[in-house]
Image 1 (tube, rainbow, N blue to C red):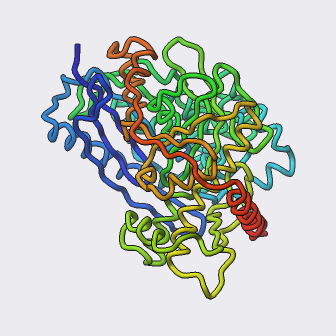
Image 2: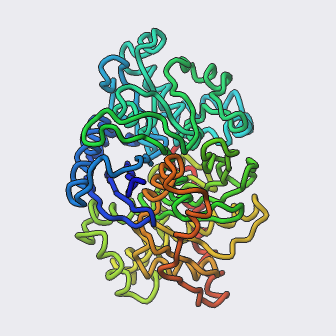
Length: 495
């Protein structure tokens, strides 16, 4: 049996390749960032060709560092930033325009126009998602309307659409056009019940069906890599990044949940083989579908700006020189000094879904200093998370006993303790930090026989650290009231 499984983890700011052994331990890795483009207010773009180049680089570097050959890998899984939209030429493989990133809000006027004719229930019923700037469907429509000649080429069958997973599989395999159910569920073009492209949504958004990839399981052998340095290795797993983290955290039972703290924050609750429709501002999405087994669904609370707010404090204000310095600065004061930061840079996602909201710093006095601002930046992540947890518990009828956490920000002890205090329940970090990449490796390993079943995967999950709540109830209620007041100040800032 092959010794290893590889995982391509293509994120919003960087691409990684990690080699895992059968026990789920990372034995080698490499990572490279790619450029973010902000050509106009509200626009966020990537160069998909740069992402492809970075992918090949990190694969080669990780294999070299670990002394691993392609022949040592049973398979490779892919996990990716989800809603980011790429359109490329079928013959040349070249994108016709920059990729429109999930954070991009250029289609805000289209959202308003479509909602004048149909309410949100129309979209939620078919796709599990509210109509929003977040998802791929309207981004794809924008490209067809605004790139010269794109619509005619698409109708002629010359252009292909995909999220980043699809683009990478197409490049790796020399032309296989496929996605999995988790990524397809983020396009707002897939029917949440049938797991097929929804003809009514395609007609409404004027999307030629020939552009769309085949929708497959999250764990199966799709094809063989034809590109060096992974030539001959099966591509055997595809999961959107948040669903991959759910799998990496071994949340395979209904009622289990994880929260990933990255550029944004994403809390997923496994609801089993039933699609639970949200009444409290959450998303109904696919959790995973492994081989021929029934699909599992999830409720998701998506928060646009969490780790990105720390980067903003570093890059735009210069209050810190590296992201890791924020905890030291925040610990220089005892509390937030009455300062609250609502980071609605691109509007508010779950549970508010306010595209017209914008960022607000509330509660400033002459007493407030940079330490209080740093603390407010960190606390904003915890406040937004508790808003999502409460909505999730109302929708699901499940009260979370514990929250499993992962992502870069979970190394921040101050933030994690504050999160446990606000939640009034334990917050648990797993022994394996790379849960997103691990989930993709698990999917590939299941498809290639490295793992027999989900019990194999559960046996690898272990706890690294637990934060337990210690805040008095009266203080918790006081902080929550002030946060809720600050959030309302961000509403309806733009017309």
